[in-house]
Image (cartoon, rainbow, N blue to C red; front, side):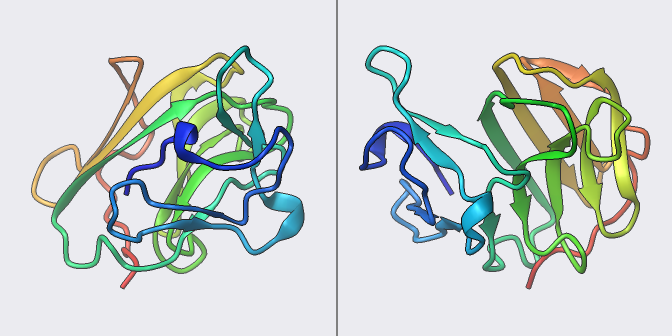
Length: 168
C-alpha cells in the first residue's frame, strides 16, 4: 500500500471516504463513518495533505498481511491534536485482529500501538502535533517482534514482544 496525498483529487476540506493505493495493487484505505473521514488539506502553499479531524484515520480492511512473517509500514504526517485518543492508521479491525498507530490512545499522552492482544502498547515518547515519519516493523521470528522508529530514531515500546492476530 502506498498513499500519496499529492495524487488525491479534490478541494480543500473534502472528506475522503476512499484513498486509492498509489502502488496500483488496489489495497485502498477506506473510512465508512462520515464523521471519522480524513479531509484533504491544501492550506499550505501548493501542498496537499491528508488531515485527520476525527479520532480514526482510515481502515485497511483486506488481509494483505495474512501469513506474512515480517513487514514494515511507514506513516508521514502530524496529528492535528493529541487531546483525546488519535489514530493515524488502523490495519484490520483492532478489536479482533490487527493494530493501529496512535497518539494518546489511553490518555497517557504518548505515541503507541493499540493491539487486540495487549490493548495499549505505549512508547516512552510523548505525543505531539509536530510532523514526523513513523516506521512500524514487525517480525514473528525476531526479538523484539515490534519496533517503531520516529524520525529515524528507535523509540521504546512497553511490550515489544507480543504476537498479534493479523487480518485474514
